[in-house]
Length: 406
Ligand code: ATP
Ligand code: MG
Image (cartoon, rainbow, N blue to C red; front, side, top):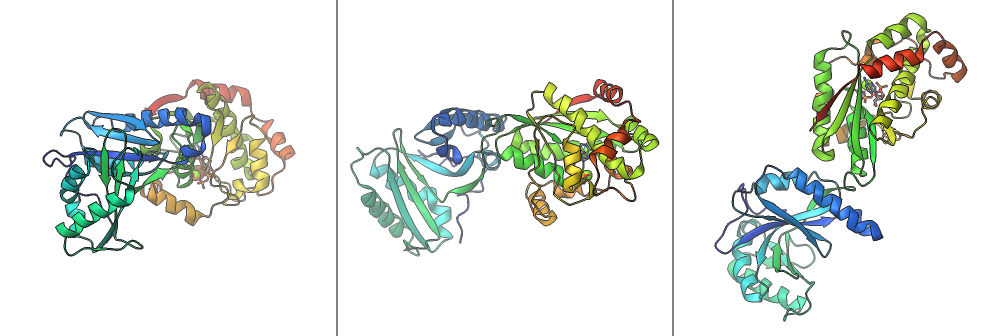
């Protein structure tokens, strides 16, 4: 049977003399040379922020491991594990029992600490690591001693060094010895905030929340921009966007959302421009406004949920036409993904069910019957001459409403 957390209790296990902590292994941080310490500090700050409200705890780092240590029994250990699982920059983590740095204490505490897991498995092995080389036993000796002890306490068990149900790890470190079960996979990626800030253009659809999540995973802090067209689009559609962003914020931390009124611009496009260029001109207006808002909020790039060829406005010529109005990078993390791949991520991050709620988006309200799949920049620019672009942009930005999503 696979290893599971040692208890279903909410708090850290509180056996007599026993203290439980969370040990965290960094992700790609190991690759970052001199920046490493800075990355670790940001990761620790992010962890602290995510664990707020769960009780008193300390977070410290030593020897490429981060330690989360509850200060008392009131700390909500189980919820802390759930939240740590969503923090980018963590390759793996585990709950661990703190032992004194002597083999007697390790042998006394381990059987009781691992009891629940041991009862549900058939085979195990022990792995030992000594960061502190002054510890009197060698690693193989620690393995032998603890292996023997566990076999005598749990006679149904056998040792299997090749394919064990559970690997028990013993780490002898500077402060103490730690006994833990298997490592649990972390969220991976890089700590949010290590790669700068970018603005996600968020609709209520499936793709843009996935694009936001994907870029936050690479360390970007997120701002968001949503174009709303009341009364064509409803308050429920706006709520949907906020719900989607709050799901993304579980990974990315709080997001500054700009809600831009887009009705007048859409009406003007519908009145003054050829129908087959509607969507494209609308998207160019979105990009122009987004660039201005993004820059005012310190974003260095825009992010969209576009995927090559998915719809008429996402063919290569259409993307070229869209990009030509902005002077900042447009990140499109989904550009090479199939819808099925995108949906899989949407399900994993729990945005899919919200995304498919049938509330209207401003793009769907004004969909032309025959959109241009091979637009030319010249015709697009010609069509836009009928619009007072600068005035429309200024007005929309002046009426934009900002809100924080946690
Ligand atoms: P999604 O599932 O993200 O809505 P989509 O496949 O429906 O994407 P489009 O509607 O063409 O595609 O939108 C492409 C991208 O443009 C979206 O991923 C999003 O980044 C941006 N976008 C679309 N509508 C809006 C909106 N109302 N506000 C902000 N950005 C939008
Ligand atoms: Mg959409």
